[in-house]
Image 1 (cartoon, rainbow, N blue to C red):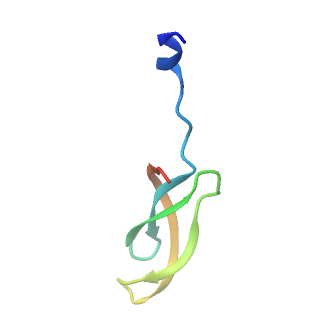
Image 2 (image 1 turned 90 degrees about the vertical axis):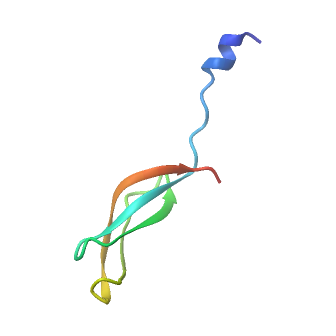
Image 3 (image 1 turned 120 degrees about the vertical axis):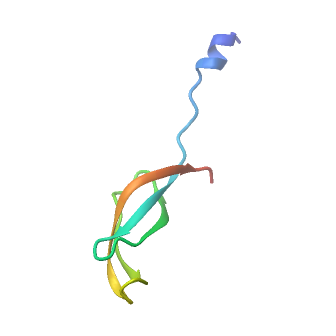
Length: 67
């Protein structure tokens, strides 16, 4: 095998990614892991700032997960 084949070989992408979830009401944030192929997350979760449930939306990708 040639050295160029080893250097140019691409690594496969991971199956899961870590994303930042943010509350639409108070701005509280936490991290969540989801599959890479899934749609963006939107969920109802308890918000500790307002002591009630609120809607959280995915804001951005943080990093890839190796498992």
